[in-house]
Amino acid sequence: MLWSKVFLPTLKDTPQDAEVISHQLMLRAGMIRKVTSGIYNWLPLGLRVLKKIENIVREEMDASGAQEVLMPMVQPKELWEETQRWKKMGPELLRIQDRHERDFCLGPTHEEVITDLVRNNVKSYKELPLNLYQIQTKFRDEVRPRYGVMRGREFLMKDSYSFNINEDSLNESYLLMKETYKKIIERLGLEYKIVKADSGAIGGDASEEFHVLAENGEDTIAVSDSSEFAINSELLLNEGEDINSLQGKPSPDGKGTIEIKKGIEVGHIFQLGKIYADAMKANVLDNEGKSQTLYMGCYGIGISRLVAAAIEQNHDEKGILWPEAIAPYEVNIIAIGFDKDQKIAKAATDFYNELSSMGYEVMLDDRKDGYGIKMKDSELIGVPINVIIGRQYLESNEIELKHRDGLSSIGTVEDITTIFEHYKEK
Ligand code: ATP
Ligand code: MG
Image: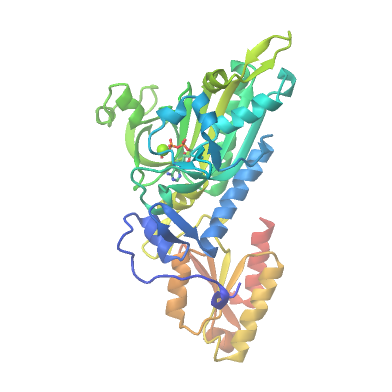
């Protein structure tokens, strides 16, 4: 992509109304623009990252055997009355009416719709276990939308729902999703903790959250420094314990010492048990021909929140440091004197074409600006590798390869191409 052709409105100054670093950087890097409170436009650069995360989530969900569906955003009141949630849910549920004054809501989650789908179409234990997922826009009229897309009102979620004949099967589905979530977050290149959690408004039995560790996280979690033990302060609070009393104490699992960390909840897995299926009469016939209420699990990942969480965990004073798997572009070519020197322009364009044909996602900064501006913009948007073609090229055929993390190396076009070939093999 030629930089001059991309709709990439970067900002020099930190926007006044953005409190946390990810929100500031997403605005400055031209990834998002606010439409109104908690509702955003995704611009090309932001959308590339969002799509990369979406694709990794989709690949791992498919690999787990889950099947993709797409449910509506608009949901009828009648379904929500069956579970009593039309009443129970507060103003977070945005209620609307159609032209006939019938009541609907914008889906904040899809337990009702999916349970209705399954009760009408699955009749026998032989069709189970079934895990259906979607990647879809949710609407929650949050009390305090903030931190940009981290806590939006409209946001992109992957939600999935497993249907099982008994508790053991539910447990298996739950553990499979837990492993799948680990794979997803590891592929994204993020540091995380799995945290025991409160089941909240959705209700149910076992529940764990996946937290990306970051200083600006909204959640406070107690983690052991030498085991997997981790617990959300919300859960401790509900059980009458105070998180501060755990600080520096031995971990309750007997391994290591407790540290208090900040986390961003990016995923949540629940064992719902039979509550929804009971309320909505979702039954199947078991192997003896008897009617059994279904067991359910539900599993969510905040795709748009992950973009912000990745930035909270990976940035410096210059801008974003994308993990390679989700960088919007892999390479940026900066040609000093692109508009003045034909030899440089040709070298840069040839190199751009070559890397593109090798399958890299490349940007060529063909703007009239100087090196300083180009480098600053590149560091801001966080392209992992910059290739600099300038005066040295005219003098000694040399170009420079500069990593976003600070390392650099010098070589001829051929050397650098070889380096890229090595990358591609990896
Ligand atoms: P939170 O406690 O942060 O409000 P939640 O427990 O309400 O989250 P779930 O209902 O479990 O969240 O939703 C699944 C995932 O969707 C969350 O783990 C989070 O990543 C994402 N998510 C939830 N609410 C928002 C929001 N307002 N903006 C962006 N992402 C969200
Ligand atoms: Mg919430």
